[in-house]
Amino acid sequence: MPAPRVNPTSHPDHPRRLRARAAAARLRHLVKRIDPSFAFLGAIVLFLGACLAGERVAEHRTRARTVEAARAFVASLEANQRERGVLPFDAANRRDWHFVPRERAGLKLAELGDVQKERLHELGACVLSQDGLRKVHGVVELESVLAELEGTPGKPNANRDPGRYAVTVFGTPGEGAWGWRFEGHHVALNFTWDGDALVATTPFFLGANPAHVPSGPRAGFALLGREEELGRALVTALTPEQKERATLPGATPSDVILGPGRQQGFEQHLGLPLASMTDAQRAQAEQLLRAVIDDLEPEAARAAFARFTQRGPDALRFAWSGGVQPGEPHYWRFDAVTAAIEWDDTQGGANHAHLLWRDLANDFGDDALRRHREREHAAPRAR
Image 1 (tube, rainbow, N blue to C red):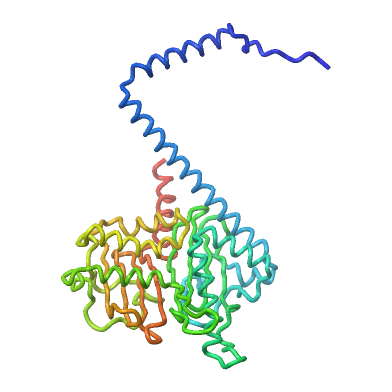
Image 2: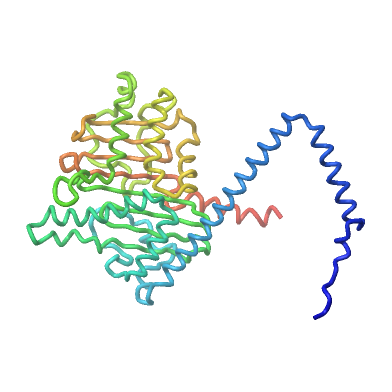
């Protein structure tokens, strides 16, 4: 074997190593002269920089993982399934969303094999938190509960079929504007990306019927029980004067107001501003808001929370209508002018809950994609 080669710069007296030792000595001398308080601040700056860098790395990994998961789901489909489950981004039915039982375009769960369902679950886990996934699965599970409750012994209601929930991919994952939708009775999830960037998470709807399962193997199950309890806790924490400002005029709405087909916000910006709450009440309001927003994965949830709070606590308002005792019909909402979350539990003897989240300026990514097009058109002129 030939003799190993020796790197001449490894010699302790090599000029490069001598210069390095001299630089290290100067640095040690400088550190000794620095005021300890400045050294501490420097450490804080370095720590925060490392945290921000870590967040950017995590965000990049999430983006890449989402595109990979979407491509893996599409790749798992047979050719005839792709014809119905993968449509152009500008397909007319991309905006045709609803949460009632009806026939839907796309691929139904009953048509998916085990591997395809696993790929779909992995895609959902890229944008939803564990709690969000649990709620979506709970909605589908409640369809089986309804089948039993509405049927006769040994003969469930055939119209309540968990296999009828449908998924559709719009566009090509990772290339330009694309998105996907999961929809069925009491669930409507609509997500939009620009390349690998998530730009919209609305319209977002979840429902629970029954809100509290009265009997059977799942008796007592309350899928959206936390949202109900937190809303009631917030309104009962208000003073009489605050509650008067928070209470909407007229009869309690019989359903969410900003449902399918609605393109404008509420007619009036009503309710109690969070700026008029005490610190403890604002903390309760934030907890309720996060109970919905945190159905998304952390990075998406942070962006969504910013959409609600960007105009300050005076613009974000909480409104209530109806009774405050369990079992009484009631409605509440957060209104941030362009973004809103509504809760309605008035149907079925106040045992049928609807939860809707709209971002009227950016549903389906409209605002984000418009701004992206404007930047692209402006770029050649800037050069």
